[in-house]
Image 1 (cartoon, rainbow, N blue to C red):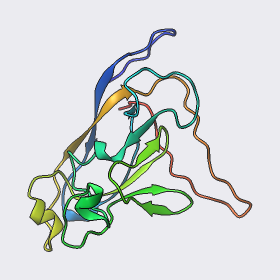
Image 2: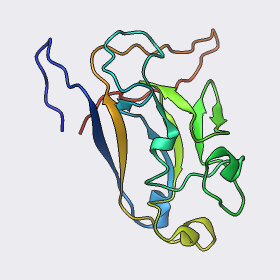
Image 3: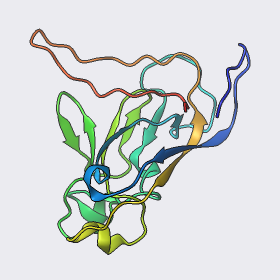
Image 4: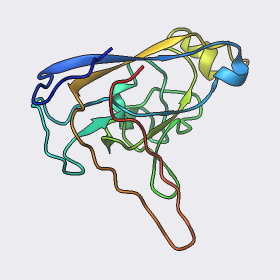
Length: 171
């Protein structure tokens, strides 16, 4: 839990922020989740400049806590699953499946994943019949997002969708 700081105070250095995901019976807990990283891992230094893209986090932050598959399989850094179906996406007016687990998203942009539970009982979660998923804690390691963060939104005359997330550590 991060309390409010009075400017010009900041938290410097790397931290670990945990995100709890509820498990349970297959339906409704084995499903899609929208996540956002409260840290950035593209630098070990404190970045306060509000420049879009200067703070980002990789999807590889997630693979030590949950099963993530992709169409490029092990070659793309994903788990080896029977059908190599994508289970992680970015969003740019449509869901874009990852081709590499080291794909980054800018602070404030969302991560879309198919949640199967933690990494225990791998076969039970990737081969039918699926087992219920357990509660899982995902950890994000990096420098805490602080200060202002600008997120550009796509907009067209006919409308557009965006996948944005809270870029700050929150309960």
